[in-house]
Image (cartoon, rainbow, N blue to C red; front, side):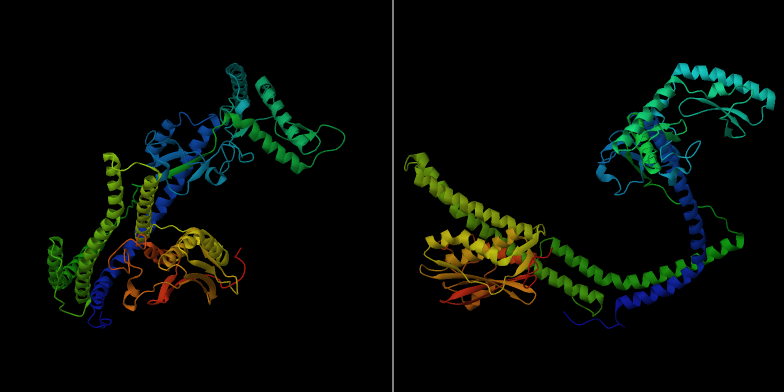
Amino acid sequence: MRGDISLRSSLRTRLLVVCVLVSLCSIVATAWLVVSVTAVAIGRERGQAIADDARVYDALVGFAATHPNWRGVEPTMRALARETGRRITLTDENRRVLADSDGEGGTSAGSLPDTPSATVDALAVDVTLVGGGHGGELSDRIDPRAVGPFRLSPEERATLRVAASRVLSCMRERRGAAGVELVQAPNGRPQIELDGRVMDTGDRCRIDALLERTPTEQRAQAQLGRLVNACLAARHAAPVQLSDDLTWTPSTARGAPNSRAVTSCISTAQRDQLSPYVAPPALLFATAPDRRITTFFDLSGPNRLRVAGVTFAVLLITVTVTFVVGTRMVRPLRALTGAAQRMADGDQDARVEVTGDDEFGRLAVAFNLMSSRRREGEQLRRALVSDVAHELRTPLGNVRGWLEAVEDGVVAADKSLISSLLEEALLLQHIIDDLRDLAAADAGALRLHPEDVDAAALLAQVARAHQGNAGAAGVELRVRPAQERPYLRADSLRLRQAIGNLVSNAVRHTPAGGTVTLSVRPLGDQVVFGVEDTGSGIGEEDLPKVFDRFWRAEKSRSRQGGGSGLGLSIVRKLAEAHGGTVHVTSVLGQGSVFSLRLPGPSTGQPES
């Protein structure tokens, strides 16, 4: 590849100059319009979004406060979705969908945003969304609509409505109709409001009769008192007497408990008492994928003409420049398109003529290089298919031959035959596993699970695992003691696989009476594993090929040496996955040394 393109002849420079000139003309004319209109749009959209969020949240908190579960919430959600233009979804804390404004099952948890809009919990209200609550201040973030056992029975409501109507008529006769209203508390109790304030003291209209607690409220208040005192008893604190307005006094003369403990127990008792009557917490997802920012703006007549004139001038300049530049760009692109079409039609020798030193010239060079690599890749693919077929043909042929002999009654299916068939099956499995590992590495799907590894201990494990095979082959397997005990960060299972492949390869190519020596040592910021044998060695011309797939030093491709021909290829892939390398040095007839270099701390204990 030639050097960098000169700045003057670069197509990028020429296009940049043209774009700057066109942009200057358009930016000056449109910047003020874009800024002003966008600011208005964003402000209005943001304000509307906040209002919609608060509206949706308030409605769903109200539903949760008055229902023990989320069944039946879909109509409310659909109405909110129509009013706000949003899609509303409720899920539990495990992100399982409870309800969706688009219908049941309309949304999967995987399609929801990572972060919910809010958590809908009537017993832990988000005060930033609801402000001061409904009809009064929030008590410990509990929604006032969550009344639970304090909800009056229909008979009690009817009785209180009669008393409230009598009091209302009396007060209007005395004070006039202005400022006196009859309202209803969340638990169904009618209340008299005077100038927007609920009356809680008596007067001549006998409002005291309306303020008396009903049996339902008394039972609920007594239950709340018991829960508070149970909480205080668990904290070894003295009991208290709880009033209707949640103020308290000591129940015994032996002293009053800590006010902080009482406040905490009252809050806990309220939630324990109300939790069976309110819906469980749910995650709220309010999304508006189809919403667009809408704006309204008006321009005067002269301004409209000015904007139209600038727009036309910019359009004319843009069209002219685009036509001139595009004409020059089309020629090499047509040549590239024709060559690509010929390549798609099967012409593996498709090329394009390089006519310049700009980006199009570089593109032509890259295309020609791609064509050459594609031809080479196709040749490698065919060779790989041939190699795989060759590797699988021999064991499959052996298995088929013996099975046909058993079927024809030529040989008996004795233990030795079964062992032979099992050996061939294991060879097939080994080849398939190696191919699978290589395919995963090529696809970038080879996952590592790094951990702190004692390199010397791992090397000893590999030696023990291969001691039997080495002994059966008459080869002595040694581990050279390390002067320093190196550690590194690696996948211990994959690392044992890589070193094990090197050991297996060394044992296979070392004659009886030979030696295979394993070693590990720190080298700067790397850890180097060594596998040295006294085997047949590798010729200098074959050294660059030892890590190629299915390559063997035996030109006859016999199976006397065993192996699948993939072990060293897997070693290279595993080394690269760890950020390391593998190298080999060899002298024909004297032996080989394989070195696996991986990044890691030189010495010392594993990092915590």
